[in-house]
Length: 264
Image (cartoon, rainbow, N blue to C red; front, side, top):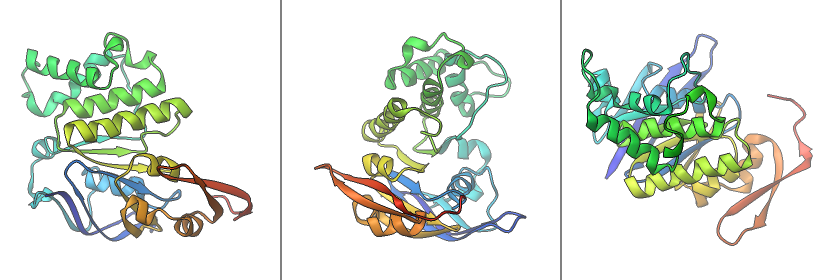
């Protein structure tokens, strides 16, 4: 059954950049990656679906329910959004950061219940970071912060999780750790995940489905093994790449010889 569907979504910034007739769907328990070069519209698409940006036309549906007809609290119980950059203005504890994911279930003048606290602890445990629950969020590593934000989304108990470049600014190990945890969540919790990524090798590693974007449009969409090809990577990034034999997945190896000189 389709969990998330987007139909003819359009959006425009004042500077002229726009998303044009974006349509796709992602099923339950599927991890869909959005891949594309800088300024291709990946983050804008994630923000539109998360209701951070208001689309000009089109429809976003969850199990055939039009998301534009839902109240914000209902949307928050349907989709959890993890931004690319998050700077805490106060040194909240890790547990308190994750507990914020329970806000849609807590009244404005109410206090979190023991159930809310337990779900927050469970979310940390699911990502195997419960040992840092009492530390200040501002004092942990960037990789741990990413996992804490994902734990907050998990505590929100939504069937859809939206992640904007969750591996940005992370070292090699932490990128793999974050991707592994996201993949495990999809498998064990059967959530639907839509996330933007920059690296085709990261996409090849974890994604069931891939949307490839360029210039505010989807240029390819389908099963990752089918749409993630050498020709597509060459076209959208303007670089020459080859394939390495990994046995299980595609590994793209870039060449320094044929690359467009203009920097985006």
